[in-house]
Length: 128
Image 1 (cartoon, rainbow, N blue to C red):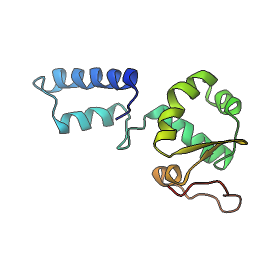
Image 2 (cartoon, one colour):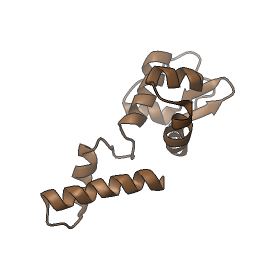
Image 3 (cartoon, rainbow, N blue to C red):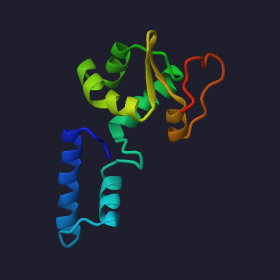
Image 4 (spheres, one colour):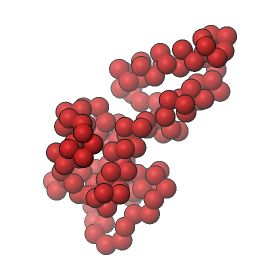
């Protein structure tokens, strides 16, 4: 799960809601796994917004590099929201890199998305 306190707290509150509505109020591993899956959180803790970001870089920009303002415009998100909410976790997980030329997908992102990284200009791509 995300180490971001605000996001982790929001997810925990939603899991508690699932425990109260669908269970006996206790949070078990199975209940938490099911709740997080239904909330769109995958096994690495990535949510829908994270995957939208990664898929945009992969599908629209061939993995990058691409500037943050371009990403923000394409996702209809503010630059600040991307830099403060989405990117820190993706950086920590080794999914993206910030380079002087822009953001790039790391090998771990291609693998997690189940996509094949394009051949060619892959310099700078981390093998994490």
